[in-house]
Figure 1 (cartoon, rainbow, N blue to C red):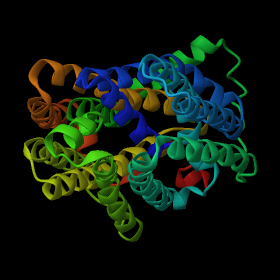
Figure 2: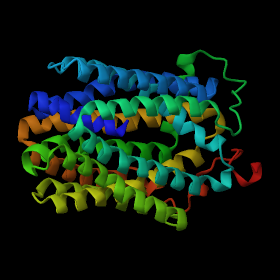
Figure 3: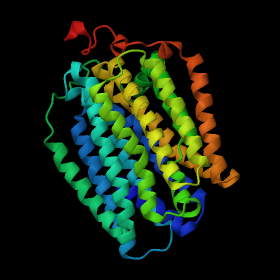
Figure 4: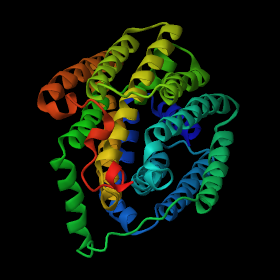
Length: 392
């Protein structure tokens, strides 16, 4: 699906030549994710997340099939692309909370931090190869990328049906209405400064500092590297993240995790500024790799803290809130970048975003002292949790 996203971004910009059109892509994808994330999290607490992910993969396969049809019928209007992106956002709205709540049911608690790091490593390897493959595929013909994404989504749907691990045990006390359960998840997040601070830090830092949505502009008009270069630019953050994730599997962050997370987000902001100023392809790749490495450290710590701080019965709903924040930071951040680029220009928009990320770090360090002072991850485990030593 990452190869597909590169092709969609290039195709939209190729048809419109407007950064705002790239922002609209993020906005269209954000709407269904915003509307569905919390209800989907409630469903993940009621039903097996594997089934939800399977159905979402089938929706993703449908979106890939429609994009392939778009290419084969040689459409010249960007409107059908927005419609397919809306469908894809719907699939992600359902799959996000389910996939993020699944890992603690697949591994024992003592292996959770390393499992998060290994999972990130595997994911980042796909994120490296996907965009690069998408860029090369677009040079040969976007239908190749869309056809490959269609096959990949179908394989994912089938594979998820055979995934093992312990099954979700629904909360017997959770017979209240669905809206009440969703509200309970939101209240839980807001009542935990560590959880609330971690996911809101990601929201505002990436919302302001994300430059991914504007990469087609850089590839075409600033760096002049074409769709193949766009694929490499999209892969660069994942390359930095993958190397970092592999390092984390060998040497996990064990002390001063709160301060380490804030430092990583600050480095992300600095890397974004360097990328925004760069007109050299090599420097741009290096800056993006640094942002990916820094973001990986932040994601690793945030994910572990949220998993440790959340009881089993709340995982789906807390993952839904986290997904809502993450989707806002990525997709809504893409919309923000497109609008800002239309108003200020592409380069100033990226630089201002990086400066905004640094400002967010300074504000959040003062606003969330419990998050800043977390030393070890397991100290945030609530009493009676299935991950606590007494429950093991």
